Amino acid sequence: MDLSRRDILKGSLTAGAATVGMAAAGETMFAKAAEAAGPAPQYEIFACQYGGPITRKQAIVLWNNGWDVDGQLSYFVWAVRDKAGNTVVIDTGCNPVEGANRKVAGYTDPVDVLSRIGAGADTVRKVVISHMHWDHSGNIESYLKAFPKAKFYVQKRELEFCSGPLAARKPIGVLFDHKANKVVAGLQGTGRMAVVDGDHRLAPGLDLFLAPGHTLGLQVLRVNTAKGPAIVGSDLAHVFQGYKDDTGSVFIMDMPGWLKSFDKIKPMVAPDMIFPGHDIQMHDGFPEVAKWVTKLV
Ligand SMILES: [Zn+2]
Image 1 (cartoon, rainbow, N blue to C red):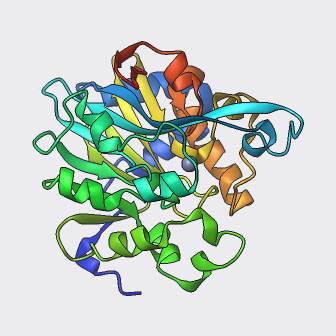
Image 2 (tube, rainbow, N blue to C red):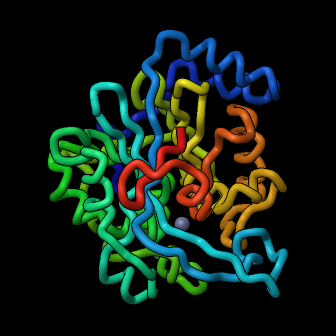
């Protein structure tokens, strides 16, 4: 596929190499990252539940541990808001048709959930697509209409894989919304998409990090908050327990890549400041500030 060069943001996180290197230094990273963030603005992070809870075997989210144990999962998008109300949204969620097809209980268009905290056409200028699975990018058409001033940030290798023939193959084809993927791919060159190649500074205090494994081009967002740096990790791990146990879900396309991503991302923040993709605790364990919206930090 043809990725227009001018649309690709490459190496624009100038502090990127140093930042990643610091991650390897382990625990001291928390203090250093907070210090490095310095006068960077602080943001609040909200989890917006758009579906669930649904019941699944625990083994699905904890690498084959607990095929005889039922657990609950929910579906989320996330909002990162500065003091002026400007909001970066992470992920689109799935569209209503897919939600119905895949029996997502309690489905509400994520656009509606986001509106409950004032995230709308005038406040959302950036949308991060963490990866292109059906439940994370499938609602792209609704977002394009609801957030007409927003630019969508996706990793180059995610886009390339999802635009190629392998993404449609069994057994992984079912994990993608192929219609939505075509819409995402079609945004190239329209001014509404930024194709990111690796780590990238989205704004002061907001850094994207490439973290492959679950998919080939998953990215996470590090956010400067009043409590220090936090990571919106999407499906790098599905539940908090995954980060505690160094355990991923059964959906890992690239295991060596996933192991390296865990080593890269986890040391960047305190253990309670990394947020997973589908844990019901993001709703049940935090203060609800609007219907189905909780404040994580
Ligand atoms: Zn997911």
